[in-house]
Length: 393
Image (cartoon, rainbow, N blue to C red):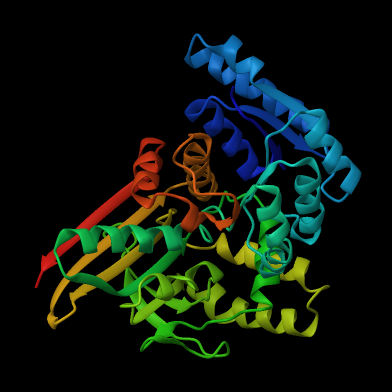
């Protein structure tokens, strides 16, 4: 029997793409939910019409789409939405991290699984408080899913698997993950920009260097070559919680870090300092104006309008530090919302298959998935996956 997935924020920029890909790539039924039922109904009609024009399965697709009125800020509304629609999994696609505990508690009470597409340290702290309850209930909770967070840890695991399988005695020693985000002048404003501002107000730039994490107050800059289309970019370190477990998984790891490319000179050197100051002076009230300012500045970026995340990894032989193999893996898409939604759907494809899933508990997406299959499924859904190996040297 197919699963029923309730998408909270299902008619938003990310939610609508999640719904479309889930209907095409899986047999799951989709409930599009949010505070505005008219918008959910409108999207449902468009998805059915899209299937009518492209295939003969529109009737089947129509039977797999429904809508629901659910307010993420109302605990009764979220619980009733899950139970009334007989959902098997709550997919939180709305930037409502301040209400994260409501969704988490509702899933525990209704005994359904959970996945979120959110960037929030506060949300992670709440989830970890409920980790024992999640395991005791035998539920699967997947967090830190999407572009970043989501892909960085999966890319490092992909690189480690490929490099260590290539030649006996090779172990991963370095991994540099770079992010590039340039969605162009037509970028629609979304509340997820405010979510980013909240995280910027708690900025940490530490990296893993010489087999230990640097201080949270530290930060570093390095140039990363994103290939022919994007070229070389100056990138600043940004600590992602999902990278934290990797050194323990790969004891040979000596260097690890995530670095985000700048937008354009005006945003990087004029607007960003103002935004950081605003967030320090007014951590709560400054979020919305800071988000509007950042959004305006990001739209000034020149082409190429593309989003990418890349991992450059090096493996070495245990007894010969001069014997190295390097791999560079980059995923990119012209639409940043697609590059957020597609990895999530690729993850859910593994979740939906019996026998391929890890056990119940709290998982970050980058560790829940088989990274090799993740890349293959993402590529099949339209993400460009570029693999480069330098070989032994």
